[in-house]
Image (cartoon, rainbow, N blue to C red; front, side, top):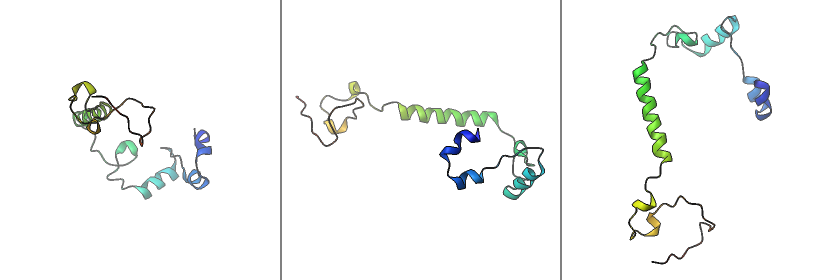
Length: 108
């Protein structure tokens, strides 16, 4: 896996990458130097046992899904905009051949 991304990494970054193994003494030493084992979750080699509240996690994921949905859904469709609204206030999602600097004459 690392060999696949190596061409995209700078040498200094590549040399900093270390793989950790649960049964390796040097890995445990590195983890102890980097993290407070009393806070670090037991799943990651620490002594922390706070666990996860699946219901709270599900709520956070639902909120995140809604944020993504609202980001990708246009706020206003052209059919919902008043025909008298100035063109500046309408967000056009369609592609156009005109550049941003050109003005397009629209008949009333």
